[in-house]
Image (cartoon, rainbow, N blue to C red; front, top):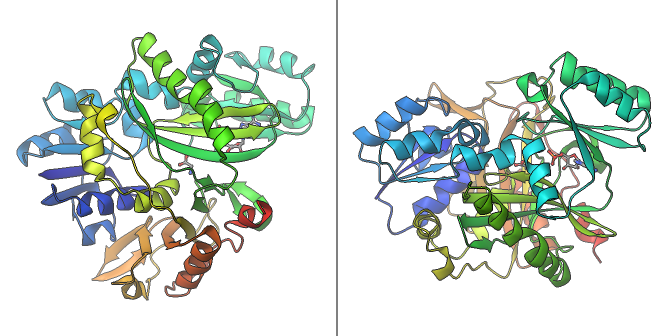
Length: 424
Ligand code: AMP
Ligand code: GLY
């Protein structure tokens, strides 16, 4: 079959690689893709938000199955456009992708269906938000309602910071229309875990857990980023945590969406915080995490395409989802300065060292082909991933492999997987 993947990051490279392993797949296209994806797929120069062009391409090439990797097109309704053309597509429709697209929607859903999450209030008037904040307990969390590249969350330690935050989000519109509404949320403490799942509208199957490192600098300092590295599984995701989430969060979310007339098909990513009172939902995403996908997908034993087809056809209950009994660590190689400003166009050397290196992966995030050479083209450049028999071995392997590649301004965190030692 012919598969089209929509997106251009490390996540889409990991998806493309899993698709390439499927015996069902003859040919992969990726729009727009990147230089690494281009080695296993044909990259098509159509943007992820050009729904009509993408659907026309899929029809013209007789694509059998399309996978949407990114949040923006999902929230914008790409799945509805494809379905209207009779095309088979993996991902939630617009009315279900709102689970990620609006934090106010997801908070209201959790409240209505008793799914554990932080206490909150929603505002569309900055003056009302400020008078609420004047009596609220600190620290407090402000969230722009809509999509903001993972950056629309402000943790405020003082009333002054909170007031400035309201101005940034709702008045200055630092995150654009995402800030028309704002959620003010109780500050929670605890370990964060990312749990990805396949969903077919009714049934949910949980993947192996992972943990991200969102801050730019070692010791969880610096600005929030899309994610600087991941490991899977999380040693903090115990059997007890899993049982709690299965009975209070996972199926409850799928059932709530169905009950609201918004059946969810695709990936639900549960951002969880393991608080003293038990696991609570920090956020939902309607797609694979990036870089979570880079440590979870390589450990999946199933044919990913078969699982995704089962989701679209509503027969996920018949799938036995299985993961390898090992671990994986991904260290993101970024361009120094990310997530603020950084240079681009630096040649990347050493990529060939990954060829034939079993259990090692170099997922491309921001790379491009220029005059026959692979160069940096984004803030997050590569996701260097390695497996190991356990987390420590995987971490040592991943850091060893970060030495194989080089480019000007190469930057990485030195402490990805620091929680692995804290778990002992
Ligand atoms: P989100 O995009 O909602 O996942 O938020 C980004 C990051 O902000 C999360 O990964 C947490 O580290 C942090 N965060 C979000 N909400 C809260 C909260 N209620 N309490 C503490 N930290 C939070
Ligand atoms: N790594 C976090 C995310 O994909 O949202």
